[in-house]
Image (cartoon, rainbow, N blue to C red):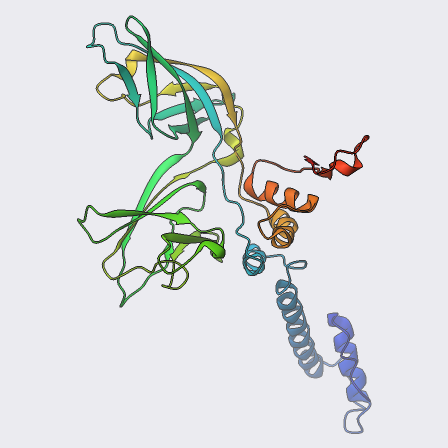
Length: 348
């Protein structure tokens, strides 16, 4: 008698083993419900069942459609040239006004990048916001200066490494809530050098050569972001003693959306924060959490099909969803379906 190897259920596996032993002359009169033989059969059935489940899980994790673990889905998406979207800090706009009465009046007030604000939602939870760029408050007459300032939710973090060619390390960032849109990657020639090169995130191999000042970004198997550099063929390679310096914002994602009340935390230049007031022009919007497993499965194949070009309506949709993490869904159609037709146009 041959074993039925198609069975994966524990009870059926055990019964198949019993049926097989009963078909042998040496064991046909055994009492298979007896304690000793029953325990041996349980062990054999458990081992077979465990192996079958483990093999089934491994096979499922090898394919994007059936994978359940995020690490497996991310790995398969990487083969398609897709990097899952990470956290995105929401953005708000405030009008910042300075009343400099009693101060030496400047021609303008410079607001540096990274000036901190606190935003508070309806539940009383506070979020950190920072200016995303440098701004100028223009004179409004007398002692008053004013201007609109964009602020992004997040907390600034800096990391650095010294590259050792004899002991290379992976540049894995220590936070798992990184807003990758705020990443700034620079390489200093050596510790103490004033020669600093800003690296640009590579999104297309077509633009890379051995001198390209590029870096690459990927999600690791444990959910952290890793930065790596060229090998001297595709992108310029690091040399011994280079200092890799990275700054970015960590974000709380979607939780910071809709905040409309902000308070200035830092002094600005030589002026005390008490000299400033602000009013909200637009509440915080655009915050998003890390891309879900389901979204990666949906977007990665379409992104691969689009190949960074917009020809079909699906290309537009794939790139739109890839570049805008706060968009949950989108509908795209061609102008030829309009009445009357509008050829050569797409509608989103």
